[in-house]
Length: 542
Image (cartoon, rainbow, N blue to C red; front, top):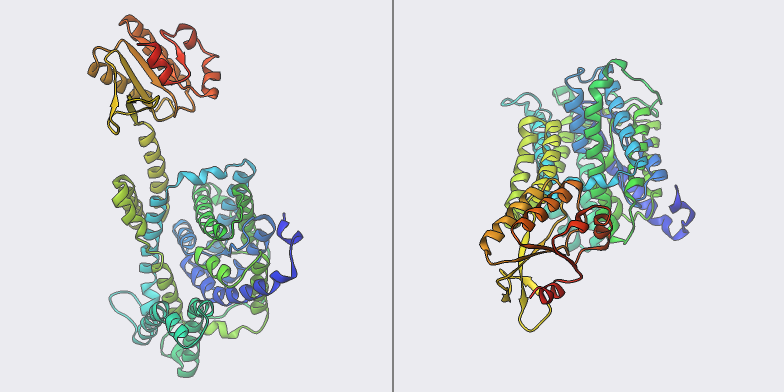
């Protein structure tokens, strides 16, 4: 823990301070907005941005990860807690904090058990589809506060403020940075000013509410924001543990996936090393800290972490500075927070999540692998049609299903000799020569219960296609493991080939595989030999 602090240098301090200030300015409107997505009072988003990043700085390994509220996790919180309690009630807040406790405990347990590798089982196309589907659901849910009332009717002043804010934010994304650079501002500062545009738009909305008395005309504002730091507590509902267990597991899984995605992309830019199991511990501890703060589940945010990185953050001290500034904002007179207009906060959410509609993964998958593209569509549709919790399950099922489907259909190549050489290659790709009496097959996958039947069928098909073959050689270059089911299948194949008078040989068997085979009866009963290479086998079996 705190390895970064032991090697801290004074030269790092200016970057950490500037990043801490910039992210704090970004977090006030963003944290409050994401609390609204979760169905909680806006100030809860600030509570979730104080203690969790401090705790993550102690346990985590990313130097620039910004931990706090995040749109998708907020949406999941609302989807899970909504059926259990009325939004805005005391029970709702307790259950949201309890969900953070369950998710944090799951993450901590996975970290202690070193299960960080599980993050690899959620494919990128499925994750992209899940993100896009969640963004659409969040944006749709914010239309009511954006326009003032239920669709298709709206409140004129609220709609004008909300749609105007959307327009300003969209224009700032596409035109503000180029305009500032044209005026002579350095590119880095121009980009930073663009990222702070939501804060400026929120402040502009606040000024308009104050000057024009828009709240008296029916424009909803955040209302009274409690002054002071969150009261630490362990309030829980004993009756809801079972209902929160499975959703908490899913939330913890998504927290880890989203956080690792953000942290890894930034770590690569600085050649930093992330330790996945330590990240699990850091995120788990951060969610426990969020629970005692009376907040809701938190995770690393890609957009906020990118701002932290671009603003010059060198170490987690930047996040600690951000948390300290947010604490000061709550302790200091904060009556101005009560006047933040809800249509403007809704606009910041909509523009932020629409930035998550990244279709590059879909285009690549469609060209490269239609199966992945279909998984993208199914994951996105699952979130939109079935809800975010069901969407997570669809995504996990698709990721695992795709993995199993591909593993169950291994590539098997018929090998032939390249003329004048010792090399054997796939006869479908190279001008390789085969001999009538020898059939050489290369299996390009590990052999296990899920694919052994397909391997057996392919071997029999090839034997029928090569009726003159008197020797079968399985080239095991790509086989790193053989499970018990596959071992029995090889033994049965050996017996069947012996009855037909066909020699059964193995070539290029890896050392660990050979060690396991020596513990079985296969090598003693093998109707053939084990060769060091296919070249040696071909020469000896002529």
